[in-house]
Every structure is written in structure tokens, then in C-alpha cells.
Image (cartoon, rainbow, N blue to C red; front, side):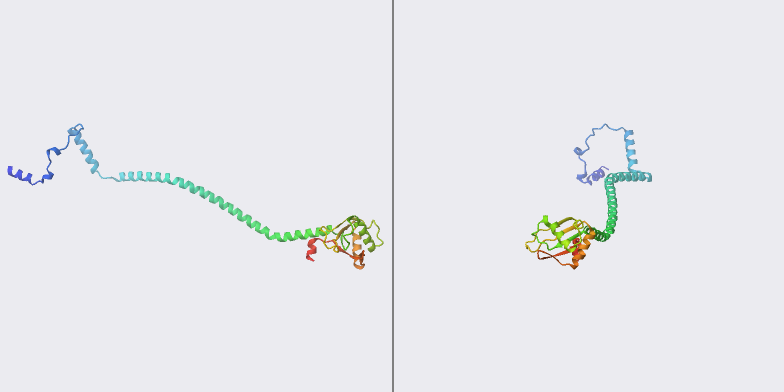
Length: 236
């Protein structure tokens, strides 16, 4: 018997033999009683060996889902608010663009009629301009040597040669002046004289007589023309 124990001890490798100095150090905690040690060991064994039930899994999954949802809400809330703000701005921009498109279409329709309206206004203005000149006569050929103060007397003399029966009252002139431009450097080219007769029928009689009777003043031929608007003269 003694020889068998000695042979068994000698079969264990020396490295696995516990030396007296390598023994566990004494614990500072108060030693547990046998009953406390037994209860603690039993509880640890139950916790480590008891399997998870479906109820435990459902609770674990519920807690996991809740934590994930809270984290997502925390992170996504600013992003969702920003997206909502961008969506509101986009809708406002689309509304403004739609309103702008409607206005552009309306303006385009109006612009199509503008050339016709402009042409009509130009024709109306030209007609009114000519009507304000209906009593005017443009006299061409009176030399520049005749001063402005003598224009009325000179024109009265010219008109009486055309209408000998007309009196001074018939030949009443509202105004007479040279054409509104600078005098020509050529003294032989005199500016036209625009005269407005008070009576339209006298003006018409003078124009008819001038077609058949040549007029001269100081040996220079004098011509009479209807005073017309510049736009009318351009078309002619």
C-alpha cells in the first residue's frame, strides 16, 4: 500500500505539484458559514444553469426596440425638421413660379397686341398733329434778309396778290415764324416760314389760288405748301 501511493505521487509532473508557498493567501473577508455558503452556491448555480424563457426574450427585444427607437428619434428629429422646412420652402417656391408663369403668359398675350396698339396710337397722334396744322401754310422762298418784325406785312402782301378781294381782316394771322432750325450757311437757301391763318376758309382759298398763280418776291419765286406733320412727310 505504501509503495502504491508513492508511485502515484511520483507519476504527477513536478510543475503541477503545489508548493507550500504557492498555496492560496488567506482571504480578508469574514468566512462564510456553512448555511450562507450553501445558499450562495445554490443561487449562482440556478442563475448560470437556468435557460432563457420566451417571456425573457420578449422583454429583452422590447427593451432593445425601445432603446433603438429612442436613439433614432433623437438623431432623426433634427433631420426631419430640416426636411419639413425644405419641403415648405419648395412648395412656396413652386407656388411663386406658378404665379410667375401665369403672369408671363398674360404679359405675352398683351405684348402680342402692343405693336397694333402702338401703330394705332401713332396714327391717331399723326392725325391730331395734322389737324392742329390745318390752318397753317408753309411759305418757301422768302429771303432771310426780311426780319421777323416784317414777316407779317410781307406775308400779307403775298396773300393779297393771290386774293385781291380779301381785306386785312380776312387775312388775319395768329402767328408767323421761321422754321425751327439753324439758318443755312448758304444765304440763298432761306428757312421756310410757317404762318397760321385765323380763318380756315381763307387759307383754303389762298392755297387754291397759289396752284394757278406764280408768286415772286424780290425776283425770287415763292412757294406755298400745306404744313404737315413730320411723320406724314416721311411717308411721302
